[in-house]
Length: 238
Length: 238
Image 1: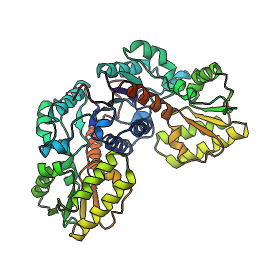
Image 2: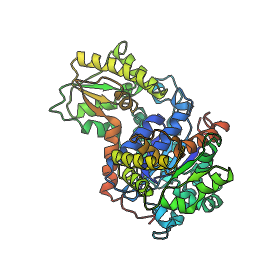
Image 3: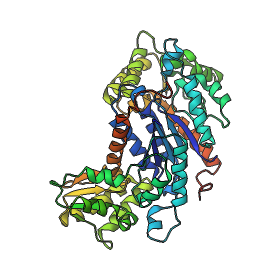
Image 4: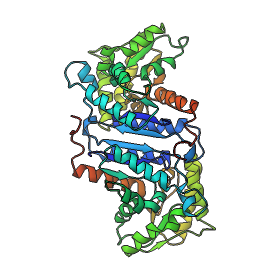
């Protein structure tokens, strides 16, 4: 049970980015200092955002199958580097023998309420309708804003779509536009609440906003969970 | 059985690099066009090179456990982005219900014998003692060379060690030195026969050598195997 389980493929590039963060966050001088990780990258999972919005197939059976597969692989915790899938967090948690880390909780805990006077949430339309980021921010009394669905949000949608298609520069350009709009509306902090957005941010002008990377915060929570339990020390297989 | 199995963690950064290549090599416009992948990243596996050289613990039981885990996860093929572990390729293959792709075969098949007048092999000392690259090159009648164990090979050793420790610039500097030495000795082509070396090559001056990236060639072979079988089309979980 001394392995991090990663339910990925939603999307595949975001999963690679998340795994890269896990490796870089782990203090290690050699292979054997690192954390064991089992990844189920299952990109055929139906589009989460569309399903939440009521015009796509229900991914829940696939999500539960992925959680079951990771449980069978004897992981000790599960991280899911896909924000929208957290709409079904309670169902997935209930079906799992091992705990799941919540990406939005990890993300919002990283915000300093003193510094974040106004937080913009960039996420899929499905995640925004689901509302788990808004709930976490309200619980901590942090002011937040969303882009206009008929305006700036279209740039967020395009950003995510372009990154999923491998078009990094185009993704970055759309993110730049969305950031400018959020800043014009008084945002000081940006939650990159879709795991494709941090990839786009490397190709965007995000100056003037304090960035919170949901993928990085989930990776930090995962590594902290594992290091606290000594999973970087060889055990089961030594 | 429509998933690529990746036995990784040897080392962890090389596994991330390999997964990144799988994603980029797959023609896809959206998540659902991608290939399902199960990754067992098990970095506690004993050092492969040391074991081959006779002064480290035998990793074979751990290697067989990793292969068994991937078989249980119903993968249809297994790729191992670690060259040195291919010393035990036959034992791992025999224990697996599904085929394993051989990194050195994939790599040597990518070399044009006409263009490669002299091929330098950069790998761990263990992989060089094991001799699977030399065997594949001899089978195709391609001339090759190794660096002096008391000279240039020390730079290859240091390059691999620095990348495993996350020191990218230092890894690149050692690779630059090793490449200069190989070029002085008449090498025209370089097999980067350790999956840490392609990472170092982004931080090195490798001009004058035609590069063959063992990780990229294994990724190409994996994606070709999967696409030929239609694993990018949703099936089991749709």
